[in-house]
Length: 102
Image (cartoon, rainbow, N blue to C red):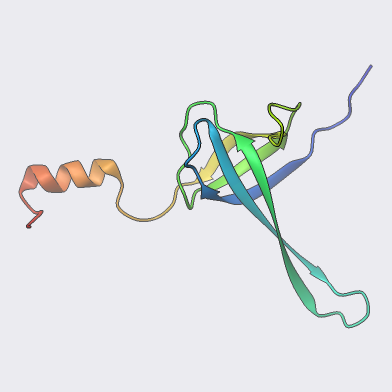
């Protein structure tokens, strides 16, 4: 028996405060049926992040899975793009060079 293809989405991580869980916002742009104006709709999904790798602002690929908790039915498949900004490696490099003042 085949279960069919699992649904997939691409979204941005909005929150990563929970242990092994991230909240992913998926934005879909559709046209209004009558007026043909583009409408932006955002849906939130709770996704399982086994290794706690995701940070806020990361672009992730999520895939549908079996229920993992009461509200968690998705899991992070991979991280497409990291959020811009200063990471921990950059901070340690700046501190070792003596560039951080204050």
